[in-house]
Amino acid sequence: MIEDTIAKIEKQLRASQTIRPERRAELLKLLETLKTEVSSIASSHREEADSIARFTEVSTHEATRSSQDQQLLDLSLEGLRSSARSFEESHPKLVQIVNSISRTLSNLGI
Image (cartoon, rainbow, N blue to C red; front, side, top):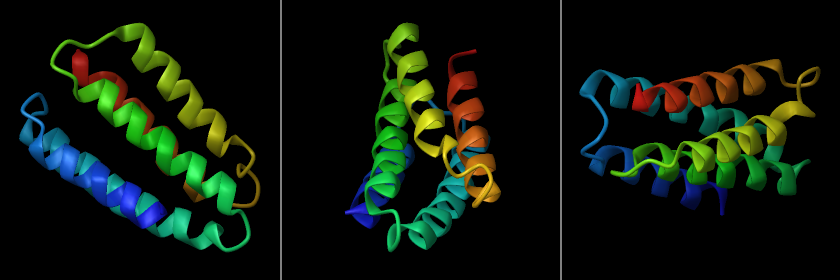
């Protein structure tokens, strides 16, 4: 499930016409790191890992829409950050990656 969701996000990023090439490359690199980090927690925290992947998918969708709704983007990004918050102590790199993805997606519309 997680791998499918991340593959779907990658496909969405590659197909998006609203993302500058340098941002796309940055997001794809972050997504690859997220995939590794989420996979490492999936065996012991499956539901949490699924939530992180799904909120990443929703946030990516909202950030790459041709007509962006800032409120929906903000809500989806807050959900993404919240889904990773419980891992701040045990998996700080995961939280760092989620925060980086959130910042990057948030700045796409600027």
